[in-house]
Image 1 (tube, rainbow over the protein chains, first blue to last red):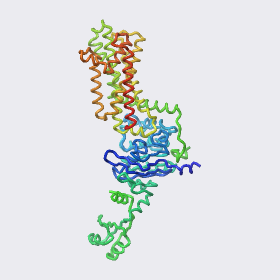
Image 2: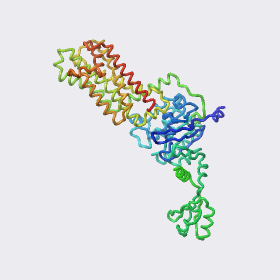
Image 3: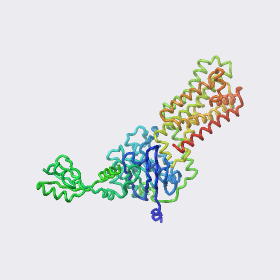
Image 4: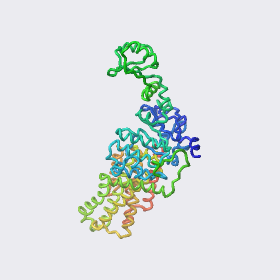
Length: 301
Length: 265
């Protein structure tokens, strides 16, 4: 069975991969795996090693130690790369070529590509077809690059910050496309600064800091790593007074509301209610991925 | 077919093979778009295509036309000088400078990550330079009747063929510079070398003794001697030696550059 086969293989894998550039350690014995049919979000601050990790998987850089494998083989072999699509962050494509021509060119590298027309239809880029790439806006360039990335019917898609510069509507369109691709069995490795993007799309998240994976799991699991919760309410109590309570980590005021961070919300809420009979709009929230991310990366630093 | 969206294949399956025809198509597509985009760049295409024939008409016909009318060897000399000059541009500027810029701007990196056939990128640039060389040569040949240059049909063919092939050593020089230099410094390096090869190799005028002695270090000198030989003019040294020098230079520079490109990009 094809499915069984799929479960026995990782599409891409770094094991114990280290890479330094001069004195800077970009990756420090990193293990990373991409499983069939998942959308893996790689998060991390600038310089955490996200791009280096992707570069090793694409065969653009050699690990100093450890191994990088793509479809079970060296990423340098062209056969494995025929399964992938790539969208890079900093790339200037030939400004004089039209979008249809750019897609046609990339499609020629693949054994069984989609037609440029089909790709443009699926990515809503038909209106850009005959426009020179150099004349497109930043967001339109990202859309064209995305169309180029998927034209070879990839089994594994590498997307480095794909939605930077996109307006809300175009971002929604890309998210829908990504979900459909995953639904069809395509695996995606996504690096992003937008945590809500990872929250909305990812099956699994890996958080990198200083070249190491400091956390990995589902969005839920990453959130759960952070015990801190947020209590918000409207109250006449003094901010300084609450800040002095045990279990309260921080208090801030946002217009009329107080935002209290605590790892023990039950105790804090009981005390709040006791102290202020008129307290209203009480809300307790778990940490979002954004807070989890901030906390995790701060710990690592 | 319409029920699926992009028809991507999930999971793990045997490596897809590409037929020879598909790989050939990838090479041709790359070469086609490389040429198209250079033609769409007026700042690149127009000077490269028009300058050699315009300068030949200016110097060979308007200014020195009377002088060379009675001196067939001088007429051929001027013609070959501008033809050789025409072959330098596509390789050095079109190949070299564009490579340096594209390396810097990440295009080469993207192509290395994609399953582009490994040599397609460089072969496309070489094809582009040969195509430009052929177009430039066509404009030069078209100007022959007014240039007082007497060549038989066979000689015209030989001169054109050798000249067009002569773009290759300049591609190799462009490749070498484009591999080492940054996008901003490459035009400067290429320009300096271009001017030196143009003026220090005795392409247009006789050189003082010291410079004459070192002419053989310039590929332009060897190419002009070969083209003069094809046009039936007495030359320095043996044609086979000139051809060997140009071929050797090309092979060495390509080997050094490719080694570096594969390792560093």
